[in-house]
Length: 617
Image (cartoon, rainbow, N blue to C red; front, side):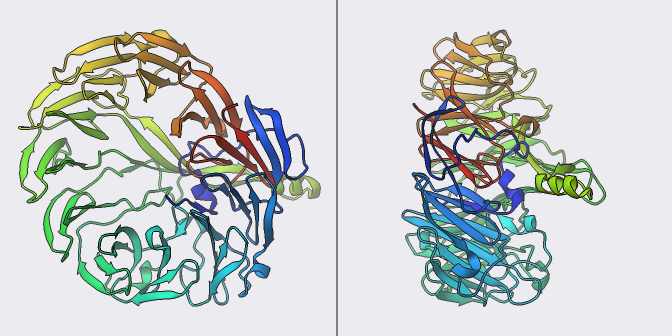
């Protein structure tokens, strides 16, 4: 899977609870590429410590196996190898033949044997410049001044991003190509040469979502009005288009119902596409189904979605804007059916529908489920449909806060003019539990009638752990439960509060145990009888966990920190931790930190400095 990184500060907090600004793992030696074997960072071993040639204020990231470490600023790039040794560095105006220079928009695209560094030099006065560099060598692969208005002049940096890409430039991994949206057309160019493959004026707008049909070598794309070009499209319409990937010929063009929204902070388009057999399924305020061959709409089950509702003050003159996401489960597909969480049209209650996959016929609808803000997961287990009623939601916020700039502060201290603090919109993303009527529920797959439903959980409901299609494990904050799925009987009820690790936040499936991630630590329970295996309160304030390779990590981003803990799940002990203060890193792990795909190495960044840490000693 490709890995895209933006240089825009906003998106560096994609999954973070707060912008990270805590202590960076101590760098004991300033010699570039200096081996750190035997030194400790937390209780991890430092493999090496090194430095970029620049300050890496835009991008600081590694590829999947850590063999390339990239750091960029507005005007230059520096790349290290897996040993921390410099591979290349240089100024963009010297590396590019069209003198691409101040690039506020930069992102990496990782390929198996390296990748690309895409640069966009948006010039207020003059012709915009695009360039693409080979990450492994720093050589310019291509440049162009043909692509203009990729963003709106004067647009703030954070407004033109989608997972690191410009809204008007989409990388197609399967074809190793870029789709570039212009005022009158969409152009596909080869990523490694910039050569135009084809151009079509049959598709208007940015590419909100695409799916590649490998069997037919065709691309299906959904459009939306991007920030940059929205005002330029007269007669804009919602388009669902299937295009021949070789020559750009439009196979079919259909319209769709609904408006594609973008998440408040991440700017991701809220839409999904799936190909199932000879049909295309589009998830946008319900489900819309199309014939894959000719684009004919076959059936739909849609609703008016109010689940991105906002609260707090507006951005105009206000202090905060808040929106919630991840409230409804994705469609659950089986060989012949699809199950959907639906919203009532008048009373806004929720219910489950089962549809025939071929015809769309409504096979059944469950009873109305009232009092639940979210229903984030559904599962098919035997002849039961398990429904999680209630749970955590993702909160995305922009808060108008005072942010301290160290450079400005230092200048102010020397000159006596100005200070280091400025007011700006600061992004936050975190998971939170909202008050609602929570329970575990099972529906009969044949009829949709309620087979059983647990008593209302007092505090909250965690996600489910389902074991061998027989038992369900779940927490409500102070209790930990086990249920027989077939009968609906409660197997045990353990007082999780007795573990003294705070309220349950999440559950992690770990072999014959369930580990309950809690406010103040961890507690593990045997699946067979609910007996407690261990409890540890050494880690507090964890807001997220990662399972990477054979490794487990917990994250704490309270109070503007970003700490990643490595955990031995067999006993709850901490292998080590890394606390970062730097910018860059992967949006997935928060500011200043990136982790290799096997979970064996953590990289931390602070300005020019880079530290590589080994997880398992």
